[in-house]
Length: 253
Ligand SMILES: [Zn+2]
Image (cartoon, rainbow, N blue to C red; front, top):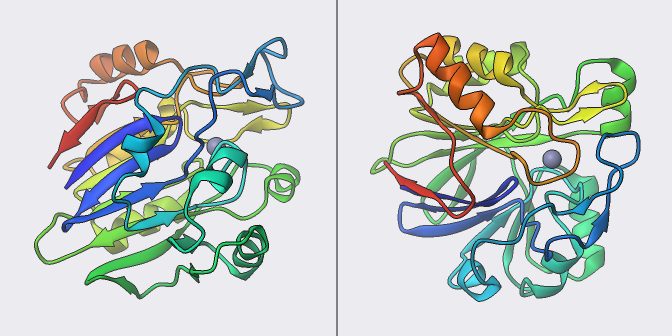
């Protein structure tokens, strides 16, 4: 497999010879206002440009996976530029309806046993924050596990903090590669995704896995920088397991 970070949570994953585009936020730098109730209110999202052209990102995509519909995972540009007949996977019926209302015609809700072109896709759970109030505000989120006889198992956790649900997914699927959203992005009511201590918990749950941290330094409310995560990993002696890609960087496993 080949996993390329485009920017934020947007990934291009080549897996068993199929190309998946995950959580496409494709706008130019500075298109959207900062999220309310967060820091850096004087900035505009995305904070950084795409590392490559839209054509390169979209070329040959077999399926799109949208873990949830927040703008930093599925934005207006993605809605406009993706072909309306492209295969779309979403987390639930409500998201399917919304995506169909935009005009997409080939939308499927991810299940525990979804199979696409011989690749097993398993929807996983997540919690987009820690308090009940915050979870209600943020809504449902998901992740996805990829399995195929010729590939290692990949778990893309999505917008979730560390909690026992992530532990369960790791125990169930024993992933070799785990992608976490690790910018520690902060709302007034608390963190929305993983920070360095959460990532350390993921490491302890899966000490042999390669953990790739994305969703960093790309939207206004990030707290954990790439440099800080790298030095934390060094301090803990786990830097061989924690990958912190730049935008546009890719890994082959
Ligand atoms: Zn997000």
